[in-house]
Amino acid sequence: MDKTIFITGATSGFGRAAARRFAAAGWALALTGRRTERLQALREELAPLVPVHIATLDVRDAEAVKSVVENLPEAFRDLHVLLNNAGLALAPHPAQDVALEDWHTMIDTNVTGLVNVTHALLPALIATGRGASIINIGSVAGEWPYPVGHVYGATKAFVRQFSYNLRCDLVGTGVRVTDIAPGMAETEFTLVRTKGNQAASDRLYRGAEPLTAEDIAEQIFYVATLPAHININRLEVMPTRQVWSGFAVDRDEN
Ligand code: NDP
Ligand code: 8X3
Image (cartoon, rainbow, N blue to C red; front, side, top):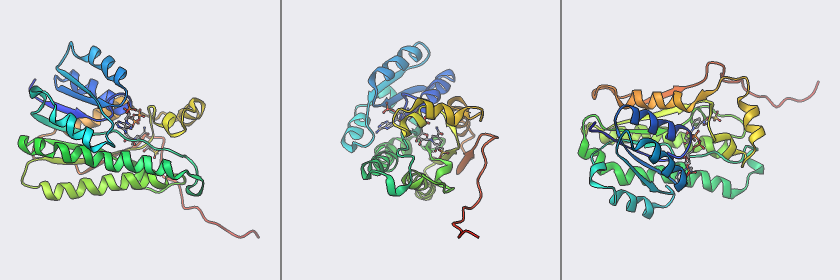
């Protein structure tokens, strides 16, 4: 065991499943998220297997991000993978009915938070060089427009383009960059999006065989452990039973 992954949003969904997947392969874990009790529970679960460092962190706070990175214990500084996973969707309503605050929260988390963490950890990743990876969790919503996607989809389009642009600047450093873009996956995502509506979340996933957090963790692990000369630029993954929809047309009657 000689590799370390730094995960944002390790308290739930893809981030937590990724922590378990990498721990099973012997990687050391630096785990962050806002919910301290969940981080502690995960450390209790995984510390018997691998070294685990936890830090309570809101990625929107650039100073806090800097401080968490500066205070990484020595054993976790030799970083191989940054998993930029923390994120959320809010306000599943048409744009004209959304509170501005919800748009700001998505931008602050999915865009500003992701660049805060990337900026703070780039030196460590470049120091590792060949074989290191930045894995950003985008979304199908960043590529394909859909009703009520508004700012959420736009933040994920940012993730895609930022990933591509990072690749250009990091050429020659050996650091890889991948945008993993999942489709519908059953996590706490819809519970957060609907501000706690468990019935709405259950309704969305029922009978559709959505992706699981473990499915995406497996893709993350695959991307991170490919030979160092291979860079997956973007990996879009959907459930077999989810596809695109057609154009909508506003038509006069008769
Ligand atoms: P979950 O809600 O289960 O997990 C989201 C994670 O993000 C939590 O660990 C949460 O931790 C963390 N998070 C949210 N806001 C912040 C913040 N300000 N600072 C730090 N951490 C934060 O959802 P998923 O696992 O599904 O989502 C993970 C990523 O995958 C997101 O970027 C999401 O947009 C993306 N995605 C999800 C899809 C899906 O269908 N589920 C599909 C495509 C992409 P805490 O609350 O403890 O801070
Ligand atoms: C989350 C997947 O289909 O709700 O990014 O946009 S979807």
